[in-house]
Amino acid sequence: MPRPSLNLSANLPDPDGFYADLLAAHDGLSKAESDALNARLLLILANHIGERGLLREAIQLAASTYRQNNT
Amino acid sequence: MTKIFEVPLYPYQRHKDQDATTPVRRKVVIIGAGPVGMAAAIDLAQRDIPVVILDDNDRVSFGSRAICFSKRTLEILDRLGCGDANVEKGVTWNKGRVFFDTRDIYQFDLLPEDGHKRPAFINLQQYFFEQFLFERIQELAAAGKEIEIRGRNRVEAIGAHPDHVRLEVETPEGSYELHAEWLIACDGANSPTRRMLGLDFVGRVFEDNFLIADVIMKADFPTERWFWFDPPFNRGQSALLHKQPDDVWRIDLQLGWDIDREAEKRPENVIPRLKAMLGEDVEFDLEWVSIYTFQCRRMERFRHGRVLFAGDAAHQVSPFGARGANSGLQDTDNLCWKLALVITGDAPETLLESYDWERVYGADENIMNSTRSTDFITPKSEISRVFRDAVLDLTENHDFARPLVNSGRLSVPCTYDDGPLNGPDCDALPARTRPGSVACDAPANGGWLLDQLGAGFTLLSLGVESPESVSAGPVSATRLALDAGENDTLAARYLGGQKAALYLIRPDQHVAARWKSFDETAVQSALALASGQS
Image (tube, rainbow over all chains, first blue to last red; front, side, top):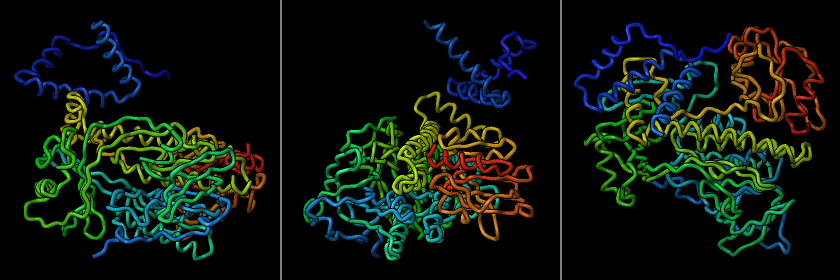
Protein backbone atom coordinates (compact mmCIF):
# COMPACT_ATOMS: atom_id res chain seq x y z
CA MET A 1 0.00 0.00 0.00
CA PRO A 2 1.49 3.39 -0.94
CA ARG A 3 2.05 5.77 1.92
CA PRO A 4 -0.77 8.35 2.15
CA SER A 5 0.28 11.83 1.11
CA LEU A 6 -1.12 15.18 2.12
CA ASN A 7 -4.48 15.99 0.53
CA LEU A 8 -4.00 19.33 -1.21
CA SER A 9 -7.29 19.38 -3.13
CA ALA A 10 -10.17 21.33 -1.68
CA ASN A 11 -11.56 18.97 0.98
CA LEU A 12 -13.57 21.11 3.43
CA PRO A 13 -17.33 20.87 3.27
CA ASP A 14 -18.86 24.29 3.96
CA PRO A 15 -15.55 26.21 3.84
CA ASP A 16 -17.17 29.51 4.81
CA GLY A 17 -18.80 27.90 7.81
CA PHE A 18 -15.48 26.41 8.97
CA TYR A 19 -13.73 29.76 8.55
CA ALA A 20 -16.45 31.52 10.53
CA ASP A 21 -16.12 28.93 13.36
CA LEU A 22 -12.37 29.49 13.44
CA LEU A 23 -12.74 33.26 13.73
CA ALA A 24 -15.56 32.95 16.26
CA ALA A 25 -13.35 30.87 18.53
CA HIS A 26 -10.90 33.78 18.63
CA ASP A 27 -13.54 36.45 19.26
CA GLY A 28 -12.62 38.71 22.14
CA LEU A 29 -9.31 36.94 22.83
CA SER A 30 -6.06 38.76 23.42
CA LYS A 31 -3.13 38.02 21.11
CA ALA A 32 -1.63 35.70 23.77
CA GLU A 33 -4.92 33.85 24.26
CA SER A 34 -5.33 33.48 20.50
CA ASP A 35 -1.80 32.13 20.11
CA ALA A 36 -2.52 29.61 22.85
CA LEU A 37 -5.78 28.56 21.21
CA ASN A 38 -4.06 28.11 17.84
CA ALA A 39 -1.36 26.00 19.47
CA ARG A 40 -3.92 23.76 21.20
CA LEU A 41 -5.90 23.42 17.97
CA LEU A 42 -2.79 22.45 16.05
CA LEU A 43 -1.83 19.81 18.61
CA ILE A 44 -5.36 18.35 18.60
CA LEU A 45 -5.39 18.13 14.80
CA ALA A 46 -1.86 16.74 14.62
CA ASN A 47 -2.76 13.99 17.06
CA HIS A 48 -5.85 13.18 15.01
CA ILE A 49 -3.78 12.85 11.82
CA GLY A 50 -1.27 10.75 13.72
CA GLU A 51 0.95 10.09 10.71
CA ARG A 52 4.52 11.44 10.95
CA GLY A 53 5.04 11.56 7.17
CA LEU A 54 1.89 13.64 6.60
CA LEU A 55 2.74 15.98 9.43
CA ARG A 56 6.27 16.45 8.13
CA GLU A 57 4.86 17.29 4.68
CA ALA A 58 2.39 19.73 6.19
CA ILE A 59 5.10 21.47 8.24
CA GLN A 60 7.34 21.76 5.18
CA LEU A 61 4.49 23.13 3.09
CA ALA A 62 3.59 25.73 5.69
CA ALA A 63 7.24 26.74 6.14
CA SER A 64 7.96 27.02 2.41
CA THR A 65 4.79 29.06 1.83
CA TYR A 66 6.01 31.53 4.43
CA ARG A 67 9.40 31.84 2.78
CA GLN A 68 7.96 32.27 -0.75
CA ASN A 69 5.69 35.09 0.34
CA ASN A 70 8.49 36.87 2.15
CA THR A 71 11.23 36.80 -0.47
CA MET B 1 29.18 14.11 61.78
CA THR B 2 31.97 13.60 59.28
CA LYS B 3 30.66 12.98 55.78
CA ILE B 4 32.20 10.34 53.56
CA PHE B 5 33.29 13.04 51.09
CA GLU B 6 35.38 14.75 53.78
CA VAL B 7 37.60 11.72 54.42
CA PRO B 8 40.68 10.87 52.31
CA LEU B 9 39.89 7.33 51.11
CA TYR B 10 43.03 6.82 49.09
CA PRO B 11 45.61 9.24 50.51
CA TYR B 12 48.83 9.85 48.62
CA GLN B 13 51.44 7.14 49.11
CA ARG B 14 54.79 7.00 47.42
CA HIS B 15 54.85 4.31 44.74
CA LYS B 16 57.93 2.44 43.54
CA ASP B 17 57.21 3.67 40.00
CA GLN B 18 58.29 7.12 41.24
CA ASP B 19 61.78 5.81 42.05
CA ALA B 20 62.32 3.79 38.87
CA THR B 21 65.38 4.79 36.86
CA THR B 22 63.60 4.25 33.57
CA PRO B 23 59.86 5.00 33.33
CA VAL B 24 57.70 2.00 34.16
CA ARG B 25 55.25 0.83 31.50
CA ARG B 26 51.76 -0.09 32.74
CA LYS B 27 49.16 -2.02 30.77
CA VAL B 28 46.21 0.32 31.31
CA VAL B 29 46.17 3.68 33.05
CA ILE B 30 42.88 5.40 33.81
CA ILE B 31 42.77 9.10 34.57
CA GLY B 32 40.02 9.99 37.04
CA ALA B 33 38.49 8.05 39.95
CA GLY B 34 34.89 9.15 39.41
CA PRO B 35 32.08 6.66 38.75
CA VAL B 36 33.23 6.06 35.16
CA GLY B 37 36.94 5.63 35.86
CA MET B 38 36.34 3.27 38.77
CA ALA B 39 33.81 1.21 36.80
CA ALA B 40 36.35 0.83 33.98
CA ALA B 41 39.05 -0.26 36.44
CA ILE B 42 36.82 -2.87 38.07
CA ASP B 43 35.71 -4.25 34.72
CA LEU B 44 39.30 -4.61 33.47
CA ALA B 45 40.59 -6.07 36.75
CA GLN B 46 37.82 -8.67 36.70
CA ARG B 47 39.13 -9.61 33.24
CA ASP B 48 42.65 -9.98 34.72
CA ILE B 49 43.97 -6.87 32.98
CA PRO B 50 46.31 -4.89 35.30
CA VAL B 51 45.06 -1.37 35.81
CA VAL B 52 46.18 1.83 37.58
CA ILE B 53 43.90 4.79 38.29
CA LEU B 54 45.51 8.20 38.69
CA ASP B 55 43.35 10.75 40.49
CA ASP B 56 44.20 14.35 41.31
CA ASN B 57 42.11 14.04 44.50
CA ASP B 58 42.12 11.48 47.32
CA ARG B 59 38.43 11.12 48.16
CA VAL B 60 34.94 10.69 46.71
CA SER B 61 33.15 13.60 45.06
CA PHE B 62 32.08 16.55 47.18
CA GLY B 63 28.32 17.03 47.26
CA SER B 64 25.92 14.57 45.77
CA ARG B 65 26.04 15.62 42.05
CA ALA B 66 24.71 12.66 40.04
CA ILE B 67 21.81 11.04 41.89
CA CYS B 68 19.63 9.00 39.50
CA PHE B 69 21.15 5.67 38.57
CA SER B 70 19.27 3.73 35.93
CA LYS B 71 18.25 0.10 35.67
CA ARG B 72 20.98 -0.48 33.10
CA THR B 73 23.61 0.99 35.41
CA LEU B 74 22.44 -1.34 38.18
CA GLU B 75 22.68 -4.31 35.82
CA ILE B 76 26.22 -3.27 34.92
CA LEU B 77 27.04 -2.92 38.63
CA ASP B 78 25.72 -6.45 39.19
CA ARG B 79 28.26 -7.66 36.66
CA LEU B 80 30.94 -5.57 38.41
CA GLY B 81 30.06 -7.12 41.78
CA CYS B 82 28.61 -4.09 43.55
CA GLY B 83 24.95 -3.92 42.50
CA ASP B 84 23.51 -4.99 45.85
CA ALA B 85 25.48 -2.44 47.90
CA ASN B 86 24.14 0.41 45.75
CA VAL B 87 20.56 -0.86 45.59
CA GLU B 88 20.38 -1.53 49.34
CA LYS B 89 21.51 2.01 50.16
CA GLY B 90 19.61 3.74 47.33
CA VAL B 91 16.03 4.91 47.21
CA THR B 92 14.13 2.82 44.64
CA TRP B 93 11.63 4.66 42.46
CA ASN B 94 9.64 4.13 39.28
CA LYS B 95 7.06 6.90 39.42
CA GLY B 96 7.03 10.57 38.48
CA ARG B 97 4.52 13.38 38.84
CA VAL B 98 4.27 16.57 36.78
CA PHE B 99 2.74 19.85 37.99
CA PHE B 100 1.80 22.92 35.93
CA ASP B 101 1.31 26.06 38.00
CA THR B 102 -0.64 24.70 41.00
CA ARG B 103 -2.20 21.75 39.18
CA ASP B 104 -1.12 18.11 39.38
CA ILE B 105 -1.51 17.27 35.68
CA TYR B 106 0.19 13.97 35.01
CA GLN B 107 1.76 10.86 36.63
CA PHE B 108 3.97 8.29 34.95
CA ASP B 109 5.48 4.89 35.74
CA LEU B 110 8.86 4.16 34.16
CA LEU B 111 8.75 0.41 34.72
CA PRO B 112 5.15 -0.65 34.23
CA GLU B 113 6.01 -4.36 33.77
CA ASP B 114 7.28 -7.11 36.11
CA GLY B 115 10.01 -9.60 35.48
CA HIS B 116 13.11 -7.46 36.02
CA LYS B 117 15.61 -7.87 38.83
CA ARG B 118 16.31 -4.14 39.03
CA PRO B 119 13.96 -1.14 39.27
CA ALA B 120 13.83 1.68 36.70
CA PHE B 121 15.97 3.89 38.95
CA ILE B 122 17.54 4.31 42.32
CA ASN B 123 18.48 7.66 43.77
CA LEU B 124 21.81 7.68 45.51
CA GLN B 125 24.29 10.43 46.26
CA GLN B 126 27.28 10.20 43.94
CA TYR B 127 29.60 10.03 46.96
CA PHE B 128 27.96 6.78 48.12
CA PHE B 129 28.06 5.37 44.60
CA GLU B 130 31.78 6.14 44.43
CA GLN B 131 32.34 4.73 47.91
CA PHE B 132 30.81 1.38 46.92
CA LEU B 133 32.91 1.23 43.75
CA PHE B 134 35.99 2.08 45.79
CA GLU B 135 35.19 -0.71 48.26
CA ARG B 136 34.84 -3.12 45.36
CA ILE B 137 38.28 -2.05 44.09
CA GLN B 138 39.76 -2.78 47.53
CA GLU B 139 38.04 -6.16 47.55
CA LEU B 140 39.50 -7.04 44.14
CA ALA B 141 42.96 -5.87 45.20
CA ALA B 142 42.73 -7.99 48.36
CA ALA B 143 41.81 -10.98 46.18
CA GLY B 144 45.03 -10.51 44.23
CA LYS B 145 43.83 -8.56 41.19
CA GLU B 146 46.25 -5.94 39.88
CA ILE B 147 44.19 -2.83 40.53
CA GLU B 148 45.21 0.33 42.38
CA ILE B 149 44.25 3.97 42.84
CA ARG B 150 47.01 6.52 43.27
CA GLY B 151 45.65 9.53 45.12
CA ARG B 152 46.90 13.06 44.45
CA ASN B 153 48.57 11.93 41.23
CA ARG B 154 47.76 14.66 38.70
CA VAL B 155 48.68 14.16 35.06
CA GLU B 156 50.43 17.32 33.85
CA ALA B 157 51.54 16.33 30.36
CA ILE B 158 50.68 13.62 27.84
CA GLY B 159 52.62 12.39 24.86
CA ALA B 160 50.79 10.04 22.49
CA HIS B 161 52.96 7.50 20.68
CA PRO B 162 52.01 4.65 18.32
CA ASP B 163 52.50 1.90 20.91
CA HIS B 164 52.21 3.73 24.23
CA VAL B 165 51.27 6.97 25.96
CA ARG B 166 53.78 8.93 28.01
CA LEU B 167 52.48 10.63 31.16
CA GLU B 168 54.09 13.27 33.33
CA VAL B 169 52.52 12.83 36.77
CA GLU B 170 52.66 15.46 39.51
CA THR B 171 52.51 14.34 43.17
CA PRO B 172 53.02 16.04 46.56
CA GLU B 173 56.60 14.72 46.36
CA GLY B 174 57.35 15.90 42.86
CA SER B 175 56.72 14.52 39.41
CA TYR B 176 57.50 11.22 37.74
CA GLU B 177 57.13 9.74 34.30
CA LEU B 178 54.83 6.79 33.66
CA HIS B 179 54.12 4.97 30.41
CA ALA B 180 50.78 3.38 29.58
CA GLU B 181 50.12 0.89 26.82
CA TRP B 182 46.54 2.13 26.87
CA LEU B 183 45.10 5.24 28.46
CA ILE B 184 41.43 5.73 29.36
CA ALA B 185 40.53 9.35 30.06
CA CYS B 186 37.64 9.57 32.51
CA ASP B 187 38.52 13.04 33.75
CA GLY B 188 35.16 14.73 33.35
CA ALA B 189 33.55 17.47 31.27
CA ASN B 190 36.58 19.75 31.59
CA SER B 191 38.92 16.85 30.73
CA PRO B 192 42.54 18.03 31.05
CA THR B 193 43.50 15.04 28.87
CA ARG B 194 41.36 16.37 26.06
CA ARG B 195 42.87 19.81 26.45
CA MET B 196 46.46 18.54 26.61
CA LEU B 197 45.95 16.57 23.40
CA GLY B 198 44.34 19.61 21.74
CA LEU B 199 41.13 17.77 20.85
CA ASP B 200 37.79 19.32 19.94
CA PHE B 201 34.60 19.34 22.05
CA VAL B 202 31.85 21.04 20.09
CA GLY B 203 28.15 21.47 20.70
CA ARG B 204 25.45 23.77 21.94
CA VAL B 205 25.51 26.03 24.98
CA PHE B 206 22.21 26.62 26.79
CA GLU B 207 21.79 30.09 28.21
CA ASP B 208 20.23 29.24 31.52
CA ASN B 209 21.26 28.85 35.14
CA PHE B 210 20.01 26.30 37.62
CA LEU B 211 20.29 26.31 41.38
CA ILE B 212 20.96 22.82 42.64
CA ALA B 213 20.61 22.20 46.36
CA ASP B 214 20.68 19.11 48.52
CA VAL B 215 18.80 19.74 51.75
CA ILE B 216 18.51 17.52 54.80
CA MET B 217 14.98 17.47 56.15
CA LYS B 218 12.37 15.16 57.64
CA ALA B 219 9.58 15.21 55.09
CA ASP B 220 6.90 12.81 54.02
CA PHE B 221 6.80 13.52 50.29
CA PRO B 222 6.42 10.21 48.42
CA THR B 223 9.33 8.50 46.67
CA GLU B 224 8.52 10.02 43.30
CA ARG B 225 10.18 12.45 40.94
CA TRP B 226 8.21 15.69 41.20
CA PHE B 227 8.60 18.21 38.42
CA TRP B 228 6.96 21.63 38.17
CA PHE B 229 6.46 23.84 35.15
CA ASP B 230 5.87 27.47 36.10
CA PRO B 231 5.07 26.93 39.80
CA PRO B 232 3.96 29.84 42.04
CA PHE B 233 7.21 29.54 44.04
CA ASN B 234 9.42 29.88 40.95
CA ARG B 235 7.30 31.82 38.47
CA GLY B 236 8.05 31.33 34.78
CA GLN B 237 10.69 28.71 35.55
CA SER B 238 10.88 24.99 36.38
CA ALA B 239 11.55 23.07 39.60
CA LEU B 240 12.37 19.52 40.64
CA LEU B 241 12.17 17.65 43.95
CA HIS B 242 13.65 14.20 44.41
CA LYS B 243 14.39 11.99 47.41
CA GLN B 244 17.81 10.56 48.28
CA PRO B 245 18.84 8.28 51.17
CA ASP B 246 19.46 9.62 54.72
CA ASP B 247 16.74 12.31 54.51
CA VAL B 248 18.59 14.20 51.79
CA TRP B 249 16.40 15.83 49.13
CA ARG B 250 17.53 17.11 45.76
CA ILE B 251 16.03 20.43 44.69
CA ASP B 252 16.67 21.95 41.32
CA LEU B 253 15.38 25.42 40.48
CA GLN B 254 15.69 27.11 37.12
CA LEU B 255 16.88 30.71 37.56
CA GLY B 256 17.15 32.13 34.04
CA TRP B 257 20.19 33.63 32.30
CA ASP B 258 20.70 37.14 33.69
CA ILE B 259 21.51 36.50 37.32
CA ASP B 260 24.36 37.18 39.72
CA ARG B 261 25.68 33.66 40.14
CA GLU B 262 27.81 34.36 43.18
CA ALA B 263 24.96 36.14 44.99
CA GLU B 264 22.43 33.41 44.19
CA LYS B 265 24.68 30.80 45.79
CA ARG B 266 24.75 32.55 49.17
CA PRO B 267 22.56 30.98 51.88
CA GLU B 268 20.70 34.24 52.54
CA ASN B 269 19.39 34.06 48.96
CA VAL B 270 19.05 30.28 48.69
CA ILE B 271 17.07 29.74 51.90
CA PRO B 272 14.12 32.05 51.04
CA ARG B 273 13.80 30.33 47.65
CA LEU B 274 13.66 26.93 49.32
CA LYS B 275 11.20 28.12 51.96
CA ALA B 276 8.90 29.42 49.24
CA MET B 277 8.94 25.92 47.77
CA LEU B 278 8.86 23.75 50.89
CA GLY B 279 6.81 25.99 53.20
CA GLU B 280 7.87 28.52 55.84
CA ASP B 281 7.64 26.02 58.71
CA VAL B 282 9.68 23.20 57.22
CA GLU B 283 13.04 22.82 58.93
CA PHE B 284 15.98 21.88 56.77
CA ASP B 285 19.77 22.08 56.55
CA LEU B 286 21.73 22.76 53.39
CA GLU B 287 24.19 19.99 52.57
CA TRP B 288 25.38 21.24 49.20
CA VAL B 289 24.49 24.14 46.91
CA SER B 290 25.74 24.90 43.46
CA ILE B 291 24.73 26.89 40.40
CA TYR B 292 25.20 25.26 37.06
CA THR B 293 24.77 25.94 33.39
CA PHE B 294 25.08 23.22 30.82
CA GLN B 295 26.02 22.34 27.31
CA CYS B 296 25.24 19.45 25.00
CA ARG B 297 28.39 18.48 23.14
CA ARG B 298 30.71 15.62 22.30
CA MET B 299 34.13 14.85 20.91
CA GLU B 300 34.19 14.00 17.24
CA ARG B 301 35.89 10.68 18.05
CA PHE B 302 36.20 8.85 21.37
CA ARG B 303 39.32 6.93 20.33
CA HIS B 304 42.58 8.63 19.49
CA GLY B 305 45.09 5.85 18.93
CA ARG B 306 45.96 4.47 22.36
CA VAL B 307 43.89 7.08 24.20
CA LEU B 308 40.23 6.29 24.80
CA PHE B 309 37.76 8.79 26.19
CA ALA B 310 34.75 7.78 28.30
CA GLY B 311 31.97 9.52 30.24
CA ASP B 312 31.71 13.31 30.50
CA ALA B 313 35.22 13.67 29.09
CA ALA B 314 33.84 12.38 25.78
CA HIS B 315 30.31 13.79 25.87
CA GLN B 316 28.25 16.17 27.93
CA VAL B 317 24.47 16.45 28.19
CA SER B 318 21.95 18.46 30.18
CA PRO B 319 21.02 16.81 33.47
CA PHE B 320 17.38 16.27 32.45
CA GLY B 321 17.12 12.57 31.78
CA ALA B 322 19.92 11.29 34.00
CA ARG B 323 22.05 10.62 30.96
CA GLY B 324 25.44 11.71 32.33
CA ALA B 325 26.86 9.11 34.71
CA ASN B 326 24.50 6.45 33.30
CA SER B 327 25.84 6.87 29.78
CA GLY B 328 29.39 6.92 31.15
CA LEU B 329 28.84 3.47 32.67
CA GLN B 330 27.52 2.30 29.31
CA ASP B 331 30.76 3.56 27.75
CA THR B 332 32.97 1.48 30.01
CA ASP B 333 30.61 -1.49 29.69
CA ASN B 334 31.14 -1.28 25.94
CA LEU B 335 34.87 -0.57 26.05
CA CYS B 336 36.38 -2.89 28.63
CA TRP B 337 35.68 -6.32 27.12
CA LYS B 338 36.94 -5.05 23.78
CA LEU B 339 40.11 -3.59 25.25
CA ALA B 340 40.70 -6.82 27.21
CA LEU B 341 40.43 -8.91 24.00
CA VAL B 342 42.85 -6.56 22.22
CA ILE B 343 45.34 -6.63 25.11
CA THR B 344 45.34 -10.43 25.34
CA GLY B 345 45.83 -10.61 21.57
CA ASP B 346 42.50 -12.37 21.02
CA ALA B 347 41.11 -9.60 18.84
CA PRO B 348 42.73 -7.07 16.52
CA GLU B 349 43.08 -3.45 17.56
CA THR B 350 40.42 -2.50 14.99
CA LEU B 351 37.78 -3.92 17.39
CA LEU B 352 38.20 -0.64 19.30
CA GLU B 353 36.82 1.24 16.31
CA SER B 354 33.45 -0.27 17.19
CA TYR B 355 33.69 1.42 20.61
CA ASP B 356 33.92 4.71 18.80
CA TRP B 357 31.00 3.89 16.48
CA GLU B 358 28.68 2.49 19.14
CA ARG B 359 29.28 5.04 21.87
CA VAL B 360 29.25 8.04 19.50
CA TYR B 361 25.88 6.68 18.37
CA GLY B 362 24.80 6.44 22.02
CA ALA B 363 26.08 9.93 22.79
CA ASP B 364 24.18 11.37 19.83
CA GLU B 365 20.99 9.70 21.06
CA ASN B 366 21.54 11.10 24.55
CA ILE B 367 22.34 14.57 23.24
CA MET B 368 19.24 14.52 21.04
CA ASN B 369 16.99 13.45 23.91
CA SER B 370 18.45 15.83 26.42
CA THR B 371 18.35 18.74 23.95
CA ARG B 372 14.68 18.06 23.25
CA SER B 373 13.90 17.93 26.97
CA THR B 374 15.74 21.18 27.49
CA ASP B 375 13.84 22.86 24.67
CA PHE B 376 10.57 21.80 26.32
CA ILE B 377 11.54 22.66 29.90
CA THR B 378 13.17 25.99 29.15
CA PRO B 379 11.48 27.40 26.02
CA LYS B 380 13.87 29.72 24.20
CA SER B 381 11.32 31.70 22.16
CA GLU B 382 7.84 33.09 22.68
CA ILE B 383 6.30 30.55 20.31
CA SER B 384 8.06 27.60 21.90
CA ARG B 385 6.60 28.66 25.25
CA VAL B 386 3.15 28.93 23.65
CA PHE B 387 3.36 25.35 22.36
CA ARG B 388 4.81 24.08 25.63
CA ASP B 389 1.99 25.63 27.64
CA ALA B 390 -0.59 24.33 25.13
CA VAL B 391 0.71 20.78 25.69
CA LEU B 392 0.55 21.22 29.46
CA ASP B 393 -2.96 22.74 29.35
CA LEU B 394 -4.27 19.87 27.20
CA THR B 395 -2.53 17.21 29.30
CA GLU B 396 -4.62 17.67 32.40
CA ASN B 397 -7.78 16.40 30.71
CA HIS B 398 -6.62 14.62 27.55
CA ASP B 399 -4.48 11.51 27.48
CA PHE B 400 -3.32 12.14 23.93
CA ALA B 401 -1.18 15.12 24.97
CA ARG B 402 0.70 13.28 27.75
CA PRO B 403 3.39 11.72 25.57
CA LEU B 404 4.34 15.24 24.45
CA VAL B 405 5.13 16.35 28.02
CA ASN B 406 8.90 16.27 28.29
CA SER B 407 10.28 16.83 31.78
CA GLY B 408 13.29 14.68 30.86
CA ARG B 409 13.32 11.43 28.89
CA LEU B 410 14.95 9.25 31.50
CA SER B 411 17.95 7.21 30.53
CA VAL B 412 17.38 3.89 28.82
CA PRO B 413 20.23 2.02 27.16
CA CYS B 414 20.88 2.69 23.53
CA THR B 415 20.21 -0.01 20.91
CA TYR B 416 23.04 -0.17 18.38
CA ASP B 417 20.82 -0.62 15.32
CA ASP B 418 23.02 -1.26 12.25
CA GLY B 419 26.08 -1.42 14.53
CA PRO B 420 29.31 -2.76 13.05
CA LEU B 421 29.33 -5.87 15.29
CA ASN B 422 25.72 -6.91 14.64
CA GLY B 423 25.19 -10.27 12.93
CA PRO B 424 22.04 -11.77 11.44
CA ASP B 425 18.59 -10.96 12.80
CA CYS B 426 15.43 -13.04 12.61
CA ASP B 427 12.35 -10.87 12.08
CA ALA B 428 9.99 -13.44 13.59
CA LEU B 429 11.54 -12.86 17.05
CA PRO B 430 10.54 -9.93 19.33
CA ALA B 431 11.81 -6.47 18.34
CA ARG B 432 12.95 -5.58 21.87
CA THR B 433 15.69 -8.25 21.83
CA ARG B 434 16.94 -7.55 18.29
CA PRO B 435 20.69 -7.37 17.58
CA GLY B 436 22.21 -4.24 19.07
CA SER B 437 19.82 -4.13 22.05
CA VAL B 438 20.74 -4.90 25.65
CA ALA B 439 19.50 -8.38 26.52
CA CYS B 440 16.28 -7.80 28.42
CA ASP B 441 16.24 -9.24 31.92
CA ALA B 442 13.73 -11.98 32.77
CA PRO B 443 13.24 -14.56 35.51
CA ALA B 444 15.27 -17.72 34.78
CA ASN B 445 16.15 -20.86 36.79
CA GLY B 446 14.73 -19.35 39.98
CA GLY B 447 17.01 -16.31 39.55
CA TRP B 448 17.53 -13.70 36.85
CA LEU B 449 18.68 -14.09 33.28
CA LEU B 450 21.31 -11.30 33.28
CA ASP B 451 23.00 -12.76 36.38
CA GLN B 452 23.50 -16.01 34.47
CA LEU B 453 25.19 -14.52 31.41
CA GLY B 454 28.92 -15.13 31.46
CA ALA B 455 31.81 -12.67 31.47
CA GLY B 456 32.51 -13.60 27.85
CA PHE B 457 30.17 -14.35 24.95
CA THR B 458 27.04 -16.38 25.75
CA LEU B 459 24.98 -18.56 23.44
CA LEU B 460 21.48 -18.42 24.89
CA SER B 461 19.66 -21.52 23.69
CA LEU B 462 15.89 -21.67 24.06
CA GLY B 463 14.55 -24.98 22.83
CA VAL B 464 17.48 -25.32 20.41
CA GLU B 465 20.05 -28.14 20.40
CA SER B 466 23.48 -26.52 20.46
CA PRO B 467 26.99 -27.48 21.68
CA GLU B 468 28.36 -26.37 25.05
CA SER B 469 30.66 -23.94 23.36
CA VAL B 470 31.36 -22.51 19.91
CA SER B 471 34.67 -20.91 18.94
CA ALA B 472 35.84 -18.43 16.36
CA GLY B 473 39.64 -18.29 16.51
CA PRO B 474 40.64 -17.65 20.15
CA VAL B 475 37.19 -16.36 21.17
CA SER B 476 34.48 -18.70 22.49
CA ALA B 477 30.82 -18.42 23.32
CA THR B 478 29.49 -20.56 26.17
CA ARG B 479 26.02 -22.05 26.05
CA LEU B 480 23.28 -21.11 28.51
CA ALA B 481 20.38 -23.46 27.80
CA LEU B 482 17.01 -22.43 29.27
CA ASP B 483 13.54 -23.87 29.03
CA ALA B 484 11.00 -21.18 28.22
CA GLY B 485 8.14 -23.67 28.31
CA GLU B 486 6.83 -22.72 31.76
CA ASN B 487 8.33 -19.22 31.72
CA ASP B 488 5.93 -16.82 29.99
CA THR B 489 8.05 -13.74 30.61
CA LEU B 490 11.19 -15.25 29.11
CA ALA B 491 9.15 -16.59 26.18
CA ALA B 492 7.49 -13.23 25.52
CA ARG B 493 10.84 -11.39 25.52
CA TYR B 494 12.94 -13.91 23.56
CA LEU B 495 10.60 -16.11 21.53
CA GLY B 496 7.57 -14.02 20.62
CA GLY B 497 5.34 -16.64 19.02
CA GLN B 498 8.25 -18.90 18.01
CA LYS B 499 9.01 -22.34 19.48
CA ALA B 500 12.79 -21.93 19.66
CA ALA B 501 15.52 -19.34 19.40
CA LEU B 502 19.28 -19.00 19.72
CA TYR B 503 20.87 -15.71 20.80
CA LEU B 504 24.55 -14.75 20.64
CA ILE B 505 25.07 -12.28 23.51
CA ARG B 506 28.20 -10.12 23.89
CA PRO B 507 30.19 -9.72 27.10
CA ASP B 508 28.44 -6.35 27.65
CA GLN B 509 25.08 -8.19 27.44
CA HIS B 510 24.10 -6.67 24.11
CA VAL B 511 22.57 -9.07 21.59
CA ALA B 512 24.97 -9.71 18.68
CA ALA B 513 22.86 -12.02 16.51
CA ARG B 514 19.93 -14.46 16.71
CA TRP B 515 18.44 -17.37 14.83
CA LYS B 516 15.57 -19.85 15.04
CA SER B 517 17.90 -22.85 14.87
CA PHE B 518 21.58 -23.77 15.31
CA ASP B 519 24.00 -23.65 12.39
CA GLU B 520 27.62 -23.87 13.51
CA THR B 521 29.07 -21.92 10.60
CA ALA B 522 26.54 -19.12 11.04
CA VAL B 523 27.29 -18.82 14.78
CA GLN B 524 31.05 -18.91 14.19
CA SER B 525 30.82 -16.19 11.62
CA ALA B 526 28.64 -13.98 13.88
CA LEU B 527 31.08 -14.55 16.76
CA ALA B 528 34.03 -13.61 14.55
CA LEU B 529 32.20 -10.44 13.48
CA ALA B 530 31.19 -9.50 17.04
CA SER B 531 34.75 -9.93 18.29
CA GLY B 532 36.23 -7.85 15.50
CA GLN B 533 37.95 -10.75 13.77
CA SER B 534 36.18 -10.31 10.43
